[in-house]
Amino acid sequence: MGHAYDATIERIKAQGGDKSRLGIEALMWVSHAERPLSVGELCHALATELGSTDCNPDNIPSIATLVGCCQGLITVDREASTVRLIHFTLKEYLSSHPHIFSRPHSSMAEICLTYLNSQHVKAFPVNPFYHTRDTPFLEYSSVYWGVHAKRELSDCARSLALDLLQGYDSHISAEHLLENEVWDLGFDSTTHFNGLHCASFFGIAEVVAALIEMKCYDLNKGGFRGWTALLWAAKKGHEEVVRVLLGREEVNPNKRDRRGRTPLWHAAGGGYEEVVKMLLGREEVSPDMPDDHGNTPLSIAAQCGHEGVVKILLGRKEVNPERLDSDGYCESPAPPTPTSRSVRPY
Image (cartoon, rainbow, N blue to C red; front, side):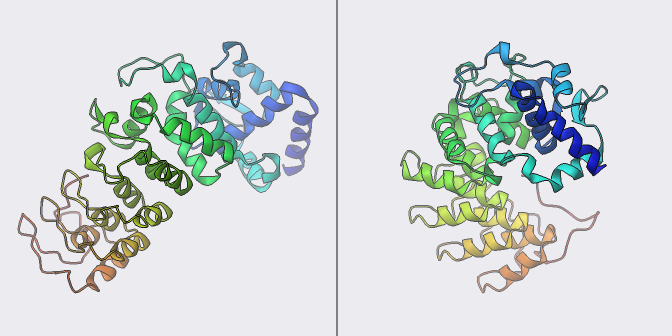
């Protein structure tokens, strides 16, 4: 199969001009996207011109054109209405031939950010009920631009990200991102989710550092659910961002969210041992601080079965393994069973 794919890739390149570009870029998107793309998403992604302030409808290719440009290497899954590679062996082939695409994740981040920075998208009101049928690429670019940027961050993507994030709390993409993250999103949530929160959510340390240097943010501001930038980074296990934020003396590592949970509590619940160690490296961090229901970092780590975190916390003399929570349960460092009481959800 490898020889057949070699020959097909060469035929795609031999088409020249827009056909060659569309063929290679379509393969890049279909093979490197974080989830299967709909026909509309793929077509609009390929119509977005890097650096353009708006999308030209005349640039949007048809799916038939893309299939032809790819020489049949992609196909439409009619049942799921998504585009996929023709065979799973093609995915393996493309993975073993990374030279076919030049910095794919960086390129995808740049396109997503160009799309989000377009005048058309910026004009949308921050409203979860606002219909955006004419922008099918909005949801994907909102949710995954940071995933691609974290993997490969070009200077262009960094600049585009800073442009987006400086006005992020009034951008519709913030709503899409939080909507994808939590199930009980409130209507006015995005007014409390700023650019620094977003960069910390994705774990892009270079962008977080740049935003801090702009001195436009209160580093201890609790946004959605009272989660600060540090709490987002700790909750997601983003070590580099946690290190950047803890390097600022003004950052309060004990700042609790609306349920009384600290960054250490969230890091312990996620089983992020290195983040737990970094947080405990700050003298003012209280390793045994309970949340509003009496659950401490030790109890959440134990209930989730994170043995490494449990050992780290038990090594601190301030931690009391016999503490009872508000329901009278002891913090026994044993993993949960199907019948045991579990910690209240996030």
